[in-house]
Length: 150
Image (tube, rainbow, N blue to C red):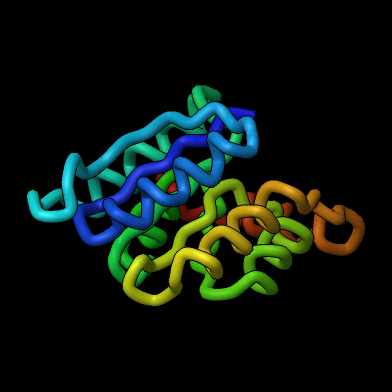
């Protein structure tokens, strides 16, 4: 599976840890965003990179990291077809896949530590969309996009 991951400067160090975690598990990683933790880099650019990679099929799913995860998740969700889920724990990462068919996991490097981040990433890639009654709601989200993304 191909994963696009990008971050701003606040998420740089965490991104490096997550990339190693993913590559150790055999994922192909497309790395983007900040080039260091000290040189400012916009979460807007990082979020746009992840969303574009997922929407164009360059990546199967994405991971977006900034200081809190809030800004970068908002940016990702400005792209029609992206369902970015801001998660702070393993349960949220599991549910965003099972119930919402999320295609981007977003989180804050200043909010969660590496072990929680790794657990969330593992859940995000292990879980499948449950479909069924949840498919109806995902369909409603898609309809909302159609109506509002002009």
